[in-house]
Length: 539
Image 1 (cartoon, one colour):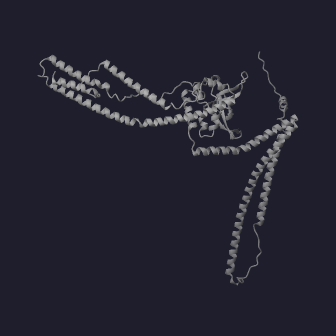
Image 2 (tube, rainbow, N blue to C red; image 1 turned 135 degrees about the horizontal axis):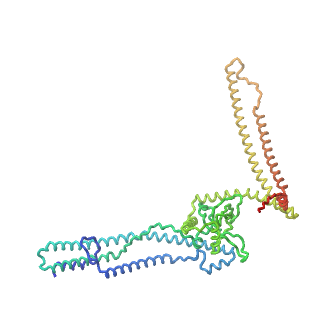
Image 3 (tube, one colour; image 1 turned 30 degrees about the vertical axis):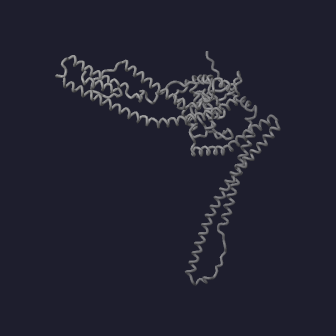
């Protein structure tokens, strides 16, 4: 064997740690068995990396256990059945407590994920730097060896005229050289065993929109109940967020099972009705939800009539039947997921000082408007009850209602007097302002007249002793005008008050004399209506 063969064998043996580089020399493909073994080893490394990642995730969440894995409200199916068999009040209390526990659990999960993301962002930088240095060193080493082999082959081609005596020996030499280069290049499969090459998945980060209709589990993600509505009703963005969410409203009792009967509805609008406030946990609320079963069935309800329980299969089936009557369908899964994210943002975001101030201002404004509306509504209600009691001959009930009505009228009268007093004060302040201006005008005129008289005396030295006193009569020019204006203002105020009281008395008298509310009168009026119906007969 020649010295060239020895050198080639030595270089081929030393190049096992090399890396792949681009070359102009045609290389033989490595053996398929060898490549298969290398591919299997690569897969083994990938599996090991995946197992390590899964172990890290399992360790990170091992400390936290979901207390209610079933729909976020139940421990298991048995727990669900037990809750459904409970009394409604007790069931709602338990569900509310569990919702609080789930909020705390979700917050802990969120914080743990944030810590994990922060740690993942800090760790890959040092790892990528060290692997890059190792790879560059291996690539340089193998590149030098292949360059040396190319030079040796060029020298051999230049010596083709007399280096070999036999053509067969020349062909053997060429084959040996090609084999050595191919073997050296075959180590490309072992390139950088320490670093795993990651390729793109070929999928866009924006997933295509799904056109699959929502299922029962999807619908229950955006179900809102009484507790959630009353807790976040004053939050900024509440009205827009709960639109198109689902809820349950109590419509009575099932005659067969004697259990509360609920209907699944969709929230279509949020309205504020100051004339009809109601109490929730000691505070007043004037919000009403317009809910629908389909586009032809809408109704308004206060927040207190909605249930905290999830939608059941029977309720969803009944809702689908109502939608089919008008050609409507359930929302898509993507729409439900977007609404779920909006609800999560509303319930998890913090409150700024501006939000807190707006909530307090809204509550105070609502409390201020409640008194007047409630008083008027209560008075009309008491008047109706009083008439019914008189017609029934219930004297004790009539006296009790009359006492309540008198107390309520005194309250309204005090409020009216307060407003009248404020109006009178405004009138008196206007009169005083006018008198003040009139006084200033008269004083100015008197000063001008006195100045003119003084100039006349100074210009006429023979007119008398300048040090002597003039005999004058004191006059108050504006006193009569002030008295007349004051009398006129008082008379106007009394007339205005008297007119309002007379009009109020007339209205109350008309209400007492009205007979359309008396039992039986409306039937008599209907009987007196003469309706002439023309009947057309066809032959």
